[in-house]
Amino acid sequence: MSDRSCSSVGIIGAGIQGVCIGLQLLKKNIPTTIFDRNDPGMMASYGNAGHFSPYAVLQLNRPDILYDVPKMLVSSNGPLALKWGYIPKMLPWIFHYLKNCNKKSMLHTAKYMHQILDLSMSAFEEIFQEIDITNLVEQKGIIYIWTNKNIKSRELEIKVRNDLGVKQKILDVKEILDLEPNLKPVFSGGCYYDYAYHARDPHGILKKIFELYIKRGGKFVKENVDEIKQTDYNQTLIKTNSKEYKFEKSVIACGAFSKKLTDQLGEKIPLETERGYHIHFKGMDKLINRPVIFLDRGFGLTPMNQGLRAVGTVELGGLKNPISKKRIEYISNCAKELLPQLGTHDDEWLGFRPTLPDFLPVIGPSKNNQNIIYAFGHQHLGWTLGAITGKIVSSILANEKTNLDLSVYNSSRFS
Ligand SMILES: Cc1cc2nc3c(=O)[nH]c(=O)nc-3n(C[C@H](O)[C@H](O)[C@H](O)COP(=O)(O)OP(=O)(O)OC[C@H]3O[C@@H](n4cnc5c(N)ncnc54)[C@H](O)[C@@H]3O)c2cc1C
Image (cartoon, rainbow, N blue to C red; front, top):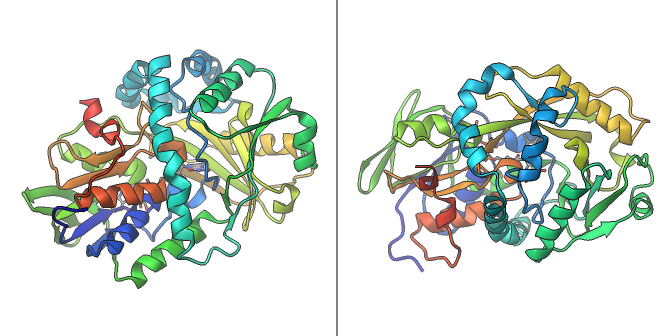
């Protein structure tokens, strides 16, 4: 129940967070305008792996991973890479990451990712009732495979998921090959989430949600936002390259680009990007029946409408460095290790995961401006978390009460 609803909202960013927040606000009869300098959904929400992963509670702030980082960085042929010249700019993030890379923080992150991941699919299922998802969404499960090389990490992941009540099926090589007969058995075991959905075209789904938003009266302004501020207790101002707009409340949902605006509001939020890549093998999507992720390699394959999408790796290197050909080569080699019949790939794409050093998103009011709400930093899980973030943020904007503990997502944890 809301004490007093809100008269108008401006949302900056038409990625999956922005459009889902917009749609939910219209359901509450709150007039909404979304701003984006690009067409909707052209950044991280465009080229991701398309997994809806409500089970993925454990993140990368883990002591076992920290131990492996130096080895991974020295090898140019591994799942993690670094643009060395960018390190000085990343120091605040690295400082907070090291602080959060211990067992207690790891379990804290897992618990509060689980809080929202657990609600993520029902929130999307509500949206799926309202848009035509024919040829866009499949529910065939998702398989993770691994070698025995990092088996201690795999055991840890299985235990944490069990402790949180996440459903998972551990598979041996034969069971994996029964499901995916074309895979070359270079792995020793795996885990199957048979209830998981995947997108056959994330951008296609986002466009459908955006079309519904427009059909229901939502507005869209294709302009770059230069400035945001709270000008009065009931007024915020969004300034674009050509005009000023006033709303009672505003939302920053700019993914990895949000820091430029939060810095203006006097908060030093250590948001960084984990760069990730995809390539497509056209016409090869029938080689597997469902997404397969090779954990040791930090990469996965998803059957999509554009072809077989090979996607993943983490590259730390900011928003401005060019695409790295070595990363593309790495992904292509990983794909061919599992499916040697693959030939040359088609398009190459670089995307920016928005990541906080404790791997929890920032969701909630700005520290100094209560009418400006943040919704960014969903890292590897922003696609999965789009619909639930829409519900949570729209409730905050409408002053509704919630049973969720939202304090853990507040940006003040970094001040
Ligand atoms: C390789 C890769 C694979 C991934 N796979 C998965 C997966 O399988 N499952 C999963 O759950 N997640 C996955 N993710 C993560 C997920 O894609 C992101 O977390 C999510 O898309 C972020 O959504 P967003 O709306 O916060 O940001 P974005 O989609 O990046 O949208 C932000 C928007 O803000 C706009 N913008 C920014 N600054 C301004 C400004 N100043 N003025 C106007 N507009 C502005 C941008 O143009 C953009 O449209 C993956 C990411 C990558 C890179």
